[in-house]
Image (cartoon, rainbow, N blue to C red; front, top):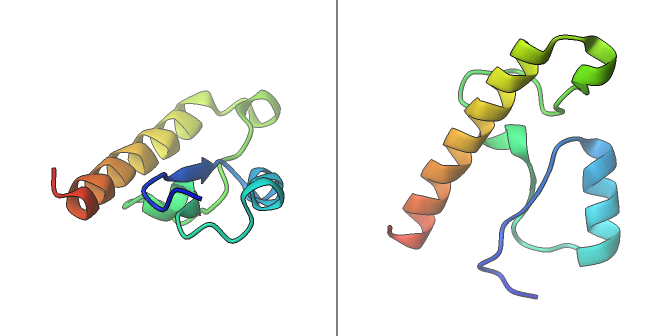
Length: 76
């Protein structure tokens, strides 16, 4: 296992599959654990919700938070 690698899932289902593959990897997260503005931990599937703009904002927020975390943790 490479502790430098971040492994990111979008929801609990993704996380379950990733845990089966990587075990208790120290950097296994849901994307929205890094979001600053949301209250959700699972990214809803916009195919079913039809709320593409909302999902875009959630993913954008999570990605921005993840990037900040990586920069802080890796000193870049």
